Amino acid sequence: MRSIILIVVACIIAAAAGYGFYRYAHEGTVAAEPLPAGLQLSGLDGKPHGFEEWRGKLLLVNFWATWCTPCLHEIPELVKLQKQYAARGLQIVGPAVDDPDAVRSMLGPLGINYPVLSGTPDSMIDIMEKLGNGPGGLPFSILVSPDGLILDRQLGEFTPAQLVKLIESHLPPAAAQ
Image (cartoon, rainbow, N blue to C red):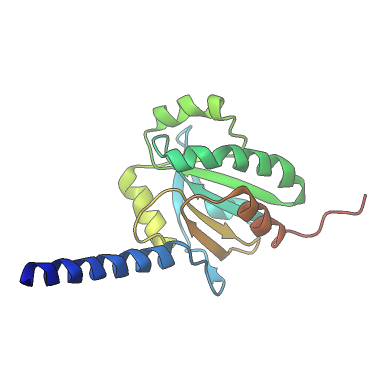
């Protein structure tokens, strides 16, 4: 009887923890907060880049890896949206939590049309943590306003509809045709 009670209690704790993680992972930022200053990543060419390079644009930063199936599933939609919304001020940037050679080998097959950055797993996890990704999961995205405020966070894969809604809600309206 005692072991049954322990199993039930363990299941309740596990369910509560799972629900807590789910809420954390699917809850966007409530209030805009400044992007932490001084975050540096390297381009695949080894040159340093800071997110302030893209100030003045709506910036979607999507952390990914070549071994992450949900990441690879999401990238074709990001490529499409970069092409579709670039003229309206969207810039997507894809920091890869991966070996730079593995990342380079995937750029062509994935058709990535936005800057891809890299770093050591430890440095990338540290940056993701500073941006609000405590668990360190992938994919992880943040949306940054043109003036450098974090508008939204997403741990896990976006659906195409979620991405369009998020981007459309923060870009200026398209010019009348």
